[in-house]
Image 1 (cartoon, rainbow, N blue to C red):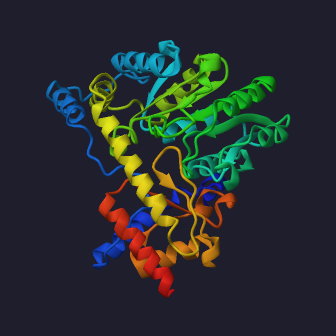
Image 2: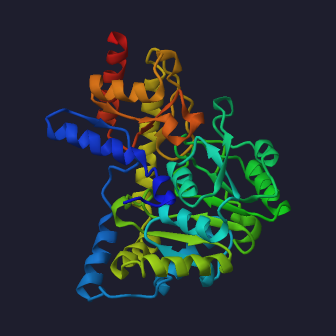
Length: 390
């Protein structure tokens, strides 16, 4: 039987496909060091886990309001007021099963097939996959290593056409760890405002900016309080080590949030109430475990970047946020995919090819340093040894 054209355009997230391959190799006895997928190696804080136990004991295992528990939406609004300087109305907030699906909901509700969406290149793999699935045109803006992979507003402005419906920005960035400057984000907002288009700000790594960075986290939502065009994509996976919980909160103009909520209601019904209780505790409970994680990630970043820059044929700019290093491997003579294959087979080190994130990622690989210092040091040693003999 023939599948739909949309189904044949699906690509998925290839880093999960690498993970599946590495797990198969591990079952065969191969020792693998994992740097391929963005999953914190910390456990979810105990207070969050206990909140779910309590919710389950109370019998919160039934349907709930499809837009989210009132307590979670109120907590999210209060955190937004502290972190971004405005308190959204509750009808601007939607609780979702993770942040990734927010991209699908937003694109499906804001952009028609054949219209244009501007995305960074390299950029998060789901942008490409979802846009292709929906039959939308993707306009890719190259990110340059010499400007630390920050999105250039001039390049964005040159790419605007009458078909452009949305600009996607991601700061801190996956895969590069780049953090955009306030003035750059403000300029892109003005471009969106001038052309009356949506600005989707992927802020899943907002809490992961290192205190030695001259650039601080900044959200375009400060300019319109998410009432006109800004949509904030956010969730609990990275900051709270809750990747498996699948919980997110999206904030935006009430009209599109309403439609996104109907799409969620149609496809998912609602997010499990006991999972939402975890989100309430995450936002209202102690933030100390989060600060500890960020400090540890900073130490790991410093070690992995220093180590990568000692390996023949590899150079790496210092990422300002998230937990990814994006080294240039062109001088090794490998393509991105061949480098990843070589490291997996010869060194037992799993990395993600840069071209998985777009054509602009060719000549680079992504390493997630949400791993122990011991494994990071071991991975650098293995990579250096493999290239020495390779």
